[in-house]
Length: 333
Ligand SMILES: Nc1ncnc2c1ncn2[C@@H]1O[C@H](COP(=O)(O)OP(=O)(O)O)[C@@H](O)[C@H]1O
Ligand SMILES: [Mg+2]
Image 1: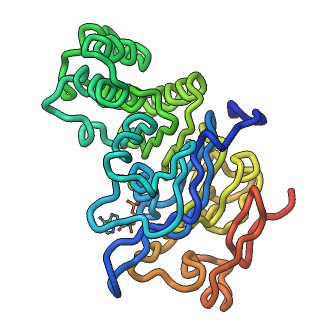
Image 2 (image 1 turned 30 degrees about the vertical axis):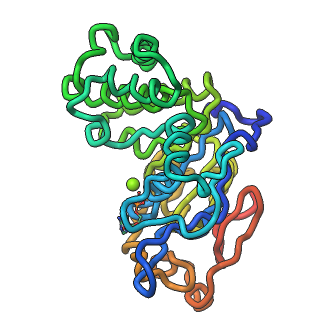
């Protein structure tokens, strides 16, 4: 497994630093936290793989970083620092400007985020004109270069086409071009290839990887598929019911996953199993945010559960590679 950037001296002061990030929906007695005290860093040139089952809080984390939480949700605690900017302190105008210049986002379904009534050149050029101060002709030229860069064939002829005239894989490329228009410091890709076939999936992920290496972006790659994280991420953060259960370098995590939930996720993927291990499904469902328990949130699905797990949240164990569990699996390897 090639992991570019490994061992490089990556700086976090120019990347993303997130501390105790908490998102709350609702007010007063009916309020509930959907993500709770998340801590992570992504340095320039580094990819953080954010994994967890559906509903664990991955997209809400992305929305909080972008300052685009759905109605009713707010960052109720913690800090998001991108380079020298504290994002949680910005006015809405300054946030829009910073997001336009410094952040790009690629979603699972490009049709829901591309505007069907605008040509692709309009959609790529617009942020470049608006946030990077380019003239109309410079923005058109830039859009053309970007479309070529992301591998859209006959880019010159396709500039004035509409999104519906592109195939799924090509639309995803257009969205990447849009996200990259201002050469962002941070790129967030939220399940960017879930709707694509395997060949398109690999092409899109390699494209993001190549652009990241060339431009030194910090990348957050969100997926429910640990096998993709193994291939494309330097670091891993496993979310369960809105909390981090385990985090570390991809090397350490895949060598020795310690949380029973991480192990269960790995055991759902045949090719990541060590010889002799069995493929399993995780029985049961995660708790809902309105009813998160006081103890370990995975306890009712966990084979190693004891009384202690139900009454107290497990403390953090470890440092660079850390987990929250009273009964970790594996151990020193
Ligand atoms: N607009 C909303 N109002 C209330 N709860 C929400 C809203 N959007 C998402 N949630 C809740 O937040 C949790 C995390 O959702 P999400 O981040 O979309 O999960 P993931 O991306 O990991 O599948 C879920 O329990 C979901 O029900
Ligand atoms: Mg999601």
